Amino acid sequence: MSTECPLSPEVFTAKTFRSNLKPIWCPGCGDYGVVTALYRALAAIKRPPHEIAFISGIGCSSRIPGYTTAYGFNTVHGRALPIAQGIKMANPELLVLVAGGDGDGFSIGGGHVPHAIRRNLDLTYIVMDNQIYGLTKGQLSPTSPRGKKTASTVYGSMEDPVNPLLYVLAYGAGFVAQGVPADMEGLANLLEEAIRYPGFSFVNIQSPCITYGEPDTQLKTQKTRMRKLEAEGHDSSNRLRAMELAQEYGRTLYTGVFYRNPNPPPTYESQIRERQQELNGKDMALEQLLGAKDAENGNLVAG
Ligand SMILES: Cc1ncc(C[n+]2csc(CCOP(=O)(O)OP(=O)(O)O)c2C)c(N)n1
Ligand code: SF4
Ligand SMILES: [Mg+2]
Image (cartoon, rainbow, N blue to C red; front, side, top):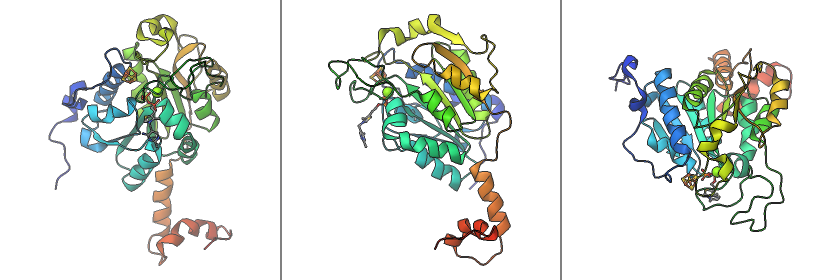
C-alpha cells in the first residue's frame, strides 16, 4: 500500500490538521488556544497528518490528539512519554508529539521525564500547565501554588510547587520554552521551533483552567503579565542564565525560548541505527545486541 499523501504539503493549512471532533473543553479553557496554535505550527512544518503520531496521557489537556488529524493515542495517566519513546524507536521516521497536563507530566508521570530527556529521542513534549487537576474536578496539582485551596486542600496547600522549567533544564533538555495561548502567534512559533529542534524539546504552556484556576492566570490577564524573553535580550544559548530566569516560574510570566542547545547531540534513535549498522551481519542473539558495544570496549556484559 502506498503511504504517499494525496495532498501536496504546499496546500497544507491549519485546517488540514483539524479533525471533525468538536472539543468538549469548557468554554474559555486555554487548551482551545493550544490546539489552534498547534494547527498553525503543523501547517508550517508541512508533514502530512499520517506521518505524525500524537501521544497523550489522561486529563482534559490529554484529549488534544483527538482534535487533530494526526494518528493519536490517548494512553494512560502519566505514561505518555514511555509510550511515545517506544513508538519513536519502532518508527523513527514519524514526527512524534507528546502532550498532557501538569499532573500527568510532573506528578504521576514525573519519574519518566528525566529518562526521556537523558535518552534524547527526537520528541516534542507539550505540557498544558493549568496548575490544577482539571479532569477530576479541581484537586491540587504538582504545579499549584502554595496556599491554593482546592477540593483536596480545603485549608490551602502547604507544599511548594514543582518548577517544570527548572526540572527539565536540570536534566539537560536541549530545547526548553514557555508560551501562553493569549499570544497565539508567539505560541505557534514556539511549537514550530520545538518540533524542528532535533532532539527532546519541551514547551510548558500556561494554559488556564477557567473552571478551577486562579483569576490572575486567565487569558485576559496573560497579555498584560507576559514578558517576552526575546525582548528582554535573553541569550537562549546560555543554559545557566536560562536556569536563573526559570527560577521566576510562578512569579514572572516569561514567554519564549529559555534554552536551545546550539550544538544538539545525537539522538537516541540515530545512535541505535549506528549500532545496528555496526553489528549488521554479526551472528548474535537479539538480547546480546545492546551489550555488544560494551563488550567491544572491554567492559563486562551481564547475562
Ligand atoms: C493511574 C491513574 N490515576 C489517576 C487517574 C485519575 N486522573 C485522571 S486525570 C487526572 C489528573 C488530571 O490533571 P492534569 O494531568 O493536570 O490534566 P488536566 O485535566 O488539568 O488537563 C487524574 C488524577 C487516572 N485516570 N489514572
Ligand atoms: S476543567 Fe479546566 S482544564 Fe478542564 S476543560 Fe474545563 S477549563 Fe479546561
Ligand atoms: Mg492540569
